[in-house]
Length: 343
Image (cartoon, rainbow, N blue to C red; front, side, top):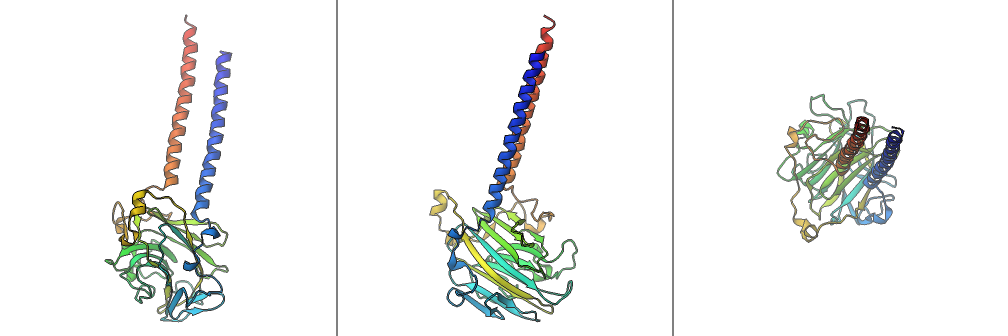
């Protein structure tokens, strides 16, 4: 019986060692995922699509319109005045299949709580410098829009503003400004970005059909997931831009920088041979965005699992199998020892 107990203890010790190794591996994998989300590798910075101080590319690689004011420290899309519209657009079409845009911005003004508006939109669209009612841009756009909406036009009280949301459009749907785009949004999250003492940050990542949006509102270089959704199809050859608008209420809407990074991702031969300029913007959802229920994390419950979530589920399943196997082996060995007593 002593030999059996010692064997069990050895097995349990080995199992604990296995658990420790597994946990270390899990932490390592999660660190890789987090680091991979926004690596900020300067070697992959695409300067022809980036806007940085002292904004020497403005005029050569970037156009601006409306109330936009370019200074040495920021690009002010709108001043803190009523009924202003402004935008800035990259004139170089982007042909990257996988990319990540980092936006450093600041929204501030003299308006008190709920007395400010309207917000900023970040665009990746077929057309540029196309004025309209949606944060100073066309409502029937082709491509991707990320809205940083600071004023609630709807009477619903299930979300707080400022609110960040995303929309993919093929020109067939109009952004409903009166309802804050609820019927067409892919997901969203609340973010306290207004009147901060520091700049705030937004990261938009598009890779292998997955759109991920992260925010850093505390200037700690710590990204918080806002939107993560698969099944997104975006073509190449579109333009990046930013726009903002004020109405009866106003704010200063400042862009400090827009940095585009190329993501080094392998594609299948079929994907490589595909004419990405002919892809129509679309999203494959299990159901319509307006039928989804908001998740407090900013994701939709109807969206597919991300890669690391699948990894966690598989790991938990593997650990469960191992635990069952060890317990079963211990129970079997005890039964064997018990049976020997009767012979």
